[in-house]
Length: 235
Image (tube, rainbow, N blue to C red; front, top):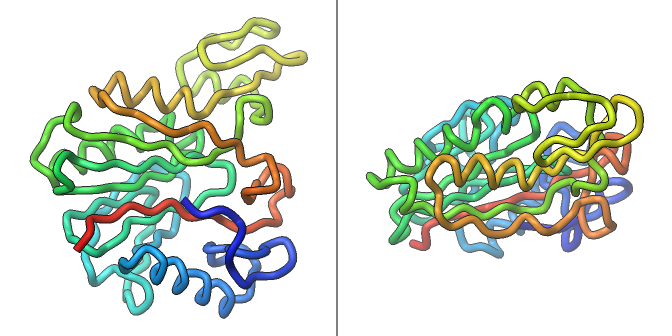
């Protein structure tokens, strides 16, 4: 996973912004994406993320640059070596999946809407199908996301996860705040869903985006860049 350092973007996007359509100079974004591909030694597939649950199976034809189609989805899966599945984030949780023996990989963008809607379960199912394996044979890694002390939410978020929303009372992975507000632990909610789906190995999820190392949509009030989390099968 990238941080905000190491690119050429300026201003609120400084410096390794990988996100298009966020207000940054397109030439700077192209430079940063090319640098990412060079550093990892793989062609990268980017998505048009919409906070949904759609998963796409990608091939070399989908790689940036030159792809004729920008998939509108929040997760992608591949079994092709040398092709990196990339998701972008700036508080939302990126989750990377790897089937045993490296036969298939996947990446998911999990904001609270996608997480509650099942984007991780859908991605896991797609990785298992591509790798002809079971969930217990898949490892998951959680990237940097908004931390549990920074993610203030309302009752609608608790309802989306089937949790009771009683003002002043905490719920699993939701700490009670002032009035009818709670503090949500996005990484723990993701771990719970992954383990319930049969994933045995889940790591990461300990880096909060609110500090200066990462882009943060909430901290910067929407004017910010995007990090990238990538996974690929070595060619």
